[in-house]
Image (tube, rainbow, N blue to C red; front, side):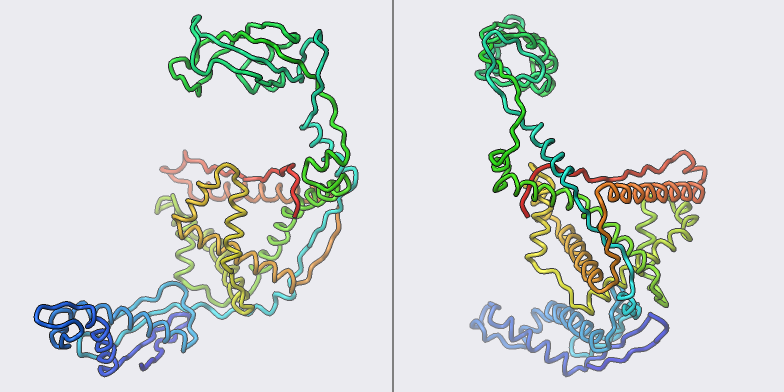
Length: 473
């Protein structure tokens, strides 16, 4: 194989590859030997079909398969030997090819620019840790206890009030007729939560043990017996017991019910959980600081094809005219995105960062835990969409790179209180909202036209809510 690199203009290169006739014939002969044992032709024993017969019968198919393989292998080797990293898919132009001929083709390549990442060690960013006051931990534990009340049996003459736990048997009718699903035994309702049927709870306020109470309620839209939907049902309720809520005693037993060893262990777990809730958000601020610094790195030339692809993504859903008017703004955004990606990728390659299958599966499991009850749907999505798995792999890859940058860069470590963390996060959110508002205004003024004047851009901000479930890490 002979390779020459031509037209060295900036990032654009033509890689000319020449493979002589003898080498191509060798590839063809190897393929004929490979298929000889699998071909059955009348008049010939398996494996004994002459090459000339095979050539007449399968020549075109064999050459097509050999050509594909040779192009794939030699093009990759040609780029690797000349240390050319293509930005996107190279264009291939066949010059000479055919059976019993030499092969000559040209790869038109846009090369990734050289990126110097030495300055990464000079990047400065804030690294926060949150000091959780003991009172915050106790406040969270009290909230958990409040949502897990104990109930104590009340005396027979005690009337039920809001917040009480009422146990009852019931039988229901619609138009004086019983119906499927209209009976219940030992049904428990916490009055005021309105979890059974709308308005059902409040009609039980004032009942006592052994009372018979008639309750009327409208059967809901999702009632299984469709012919009864939105009809009024009468429930004859026999009150079995009334229980009063009592404060949960926060002790070792309470802690063990939540999965901790004892109360002291529970406090440690809750403190760590609160810290993690803030840490995840503050870590994102640190990451944004790093990415902002990477945008300042000097890269002489951005590959034109990558720029066009990024602009295309940014202008999705816009008319050609509006896209053209916004091009200058989109170019600036696209260049920053591409530059950041190039720096991250170069740093990842230099440090031989890879994503293992175990790390990828761990990330998928993390996604499953974030969507309880929908695990099967999420797993099916990833199994049926390789591109989604590839995207997830990219996310893990980027996080590994960012974590390594944090190790090598200059961190300004700050221990802050919970209140200070909330203030920092609120200020960051306000700045983000301000930027989004600014971009929306700029976009409106840039793309305003007769066809788009009445359209508005809707932007939604996704915020994560913190869970109060206790978990060990």
